Image (cartoon, rainbow, N blue to C red):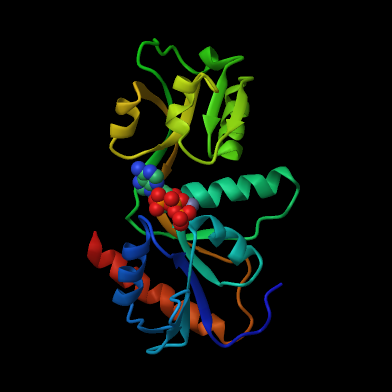
Length: 226
Ligand code: ATP
Ligand code: ZN
C-alpha cells in the first residue's frame, strides 16, 4: 500500500559489504545525489531518484511497507525474509528484479572438521545454528530431515565450540572463517549475490516511467560489466 509519489526511492546498505558497490552501480546508471548532513537520505539531483541508507536487514521490510520502491540487498536476506513472511501466511511483498554480480557468497552447512559427511540424513536430531532460520527450515523440510534450528544473530561459527549447536549454516565466501573455527563446508543451500529488489506490483504513477528507465540503464551497465 504505497502512496502516490513522483520520485523513486532506493534503499541501499549504509555501510558494509554492499554499500560501495551499490552506490557505484547507481552512479554508473547516471544518478547523482546531494547528501543530507546525517547521510541517511540522499536527494537525487540528475533524476528524481533518492537514496535511503539503511541496514541491509531493513531493506526487504522497507519495500514491503512501500517506504522504498527498490533496494539493493543480498539474495540471502531477501529470501530469508520472504520465507519468514510465507511461514506466517503473508503474501509476497517484493521480488528479485536483477542479479547484480557483486557480493557473491554461499549459504552453506558446515560441520566440525573431524566429522565424515554422509549427506543430509546425518543431520537427523542435531542442532544447527544459523542467522537464516527460514531458509534452513525450508531446506531441512525438503530433505525430509528433522533437526533443530538454533537462531543466532551473530558469531554463528563459534556455536559448535560453545556447545550451543552441533553444526552451523552460515554465509561463506573464502571459507577462511570456517577454517579458523575448525569447521568445513559440506552443502550449499543458496548461491547468493547482491540483487535489485522491487515491488511485486507495477507502479501506477510517474514512478513507472522512472523505474523502467532505471532498469534499462542498469541492464546496459550490467551487460558492459560481464
Ligand atoms: P548491516 O550493518 O547493514 O546489518 P551486515 O553486517 O548485516 O550489515 P555485511 O556483513 O556487510 O552485512 O554483509 C552484507 C551482505 O554481503 C550479506 O548479506 C551477503 O549478501 C553479502 N556477503 C558477501 N560475502 C559475505 C560473507 N563472507 N559474509 C557475510 N556476508 C557476505
Ligand atoms: Zn545486516
